[in-house]
Image 1 (cartoon, rainbow, N blue to C red):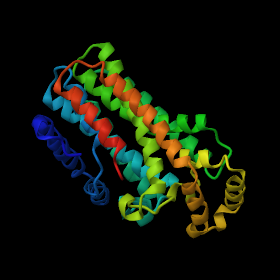
Image 2 (image 1 turned 90 degrees about the vertical axis):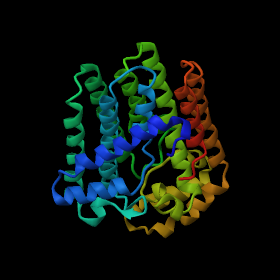
Image 3 (image 1 turned 180 degrees about the horizontal axis):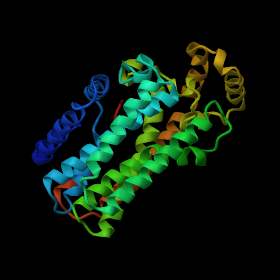
Image 4 (image 1 turned 90 degrees about the horizontal axis):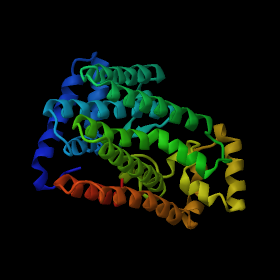
Length: 323
């Protein structure tokens, strides 16, 4: 995400985070280095480190500390992507073959573990037990979210409540942690830390729901993966959950999932088209906007400084994204 000119200092910090990420991974074994650097170069919005940097500006802190912390959060996110792709059997990430697809699960596991370990090595230099506890809890719940997703694969008898709990663990808590960790590094008040945490939480919930909507509405060229890929891989997201209220559609998908190991991706196209024709996309957008509005209401309670407006702009940016 390119920041407006008035936030030049944050742009400088973001560049330093990027430099630190590359420097950290250049010391790795050749295979790990090659694949990790490729993942860095493939793009990504760097939303998580940016939120950490912005949140830290509500207090006072060491530039070195906030840059290292922001880099740690991006490393954790990167490692989770490697593991997530492997669990999901995803063939493509940002338009490129995933690591497990290019090599195998063993290689992908080791590379993901290395990136995690590198993040932990970096965070060990921050002498704050509360930050360590926050990260430990977040990583624990991230693992729970991945297991919940794996257990529910090819199961259509899920509730919206289960879906929301899964995306809370998989996505929203890490984004919330990015905001709170920045506030903790900035040595802000506990009240402000709570505000920023819940801003990140609501933003993360909205972010993931929008991501699940885009899986249906955007092209393969825009997404860097085939349209409707979540459904094909057996993952029921909010648009599908809402669309399954149509019993005919429910029956058709149940039959397809019964023989999922024999199906081709093209076998799901009729179902994908049917979901698009329902009002499930619009209903999902309304729910995403409800979370977004909660995030915006929290921003209104923050101190009046430049970063407050930037958090508002980030919420607007994420709500309008197309990939």
